[in-house]
Length: 363
Ligand code: CP3
Image (cartoon, rainbow, N blue to C red; front, side):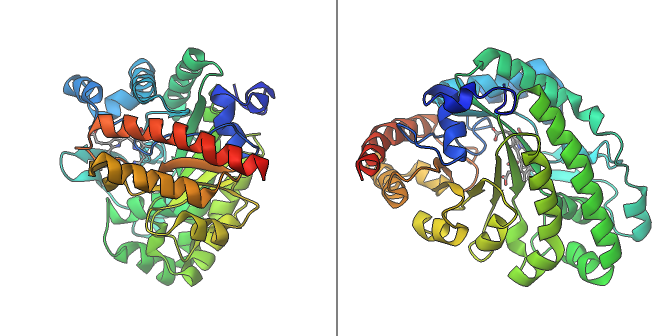
């Protein structure tokens, strides 16, 4: 159930309410924790499911997507469950088929390169993504108010980059060629994406997502000037549209140290910090009017437990128990990560944040 439909989860300091409260910068007893890519190949249970289904099959079968989401959240003991889906799913109803090739990541067969390609993209079929909403309904029915439920989508810039490059990219040459060289088409493309993503998020919120995370994973490829000129408006439009649905928004990107202040001015409730910058510096750039999420280096999960614990404590100390911190990684869990270390982090966050948060409450 989302915050708009009922005040109960937000007012409940425990369980699912803890995560939503932190998104809204309300005080909590201990810092909520979840992990980017918490369901994935590092977990045996996920690998077992993957033996029988492709990634897209899992996403399109609500029963299986819900099971994968629930299993990961319960195994880790986290405060929020992110729905199992993929960033690229909206490409298909827009008219761009794609597939995941082993070892290569996503491949879009006919990348968007011309004005005609942009004009041909459809914006009227977000309903085709109802399978994600069905999975959210199942997860929401399972957890009720015990855990926060996170829906998500890509940000217009990051999705446009996949559409134009045809997959992942290092230098974003085709993307930037369109941005600079055919700005009209670029703007139409981001506008079409914002329209489809708004409809897609609405389906997720109506199905029971408590919070929406917008992944602008590759926005760090832009200078501040280009972010302002070519990406900001479409992100802001999406953020505001989702907030009007009555749920908080988390806006996340990687290598964003130079963009944080501008990202925060989209109005997103929470800014996701990557792991390259100390949390307090990132929070200063974001401003005290926003919550922050982050920001442990995911590769720290391979370190000895003492080192891991020192890094977890450091982040909690930099957050200093101020309302509005959600503990997370600074980017996703990688495939060979030891599950027991992820579980250990949950325990560490619970223990240490009880102390930092109580100290902050005493002033
Ligand atoms: O637990 C969760 O986090 C939910 C599931 C989730 C997936 N993708 C499933 C997935 C989420 C939140 C995503 C988001 C996503 N997808 C992002 C944004 C997050 C980020 O990392 O910044 C991006 C960029 C994508 C696109 C994507 N999907 C890539 C580049 C890849 C291949 C990379 C790789 O590790 O192979 C995927 C595949 C993918 N999506 C996997 C999972 C669990 C792994 C592949 C598999 O199971 O075959």
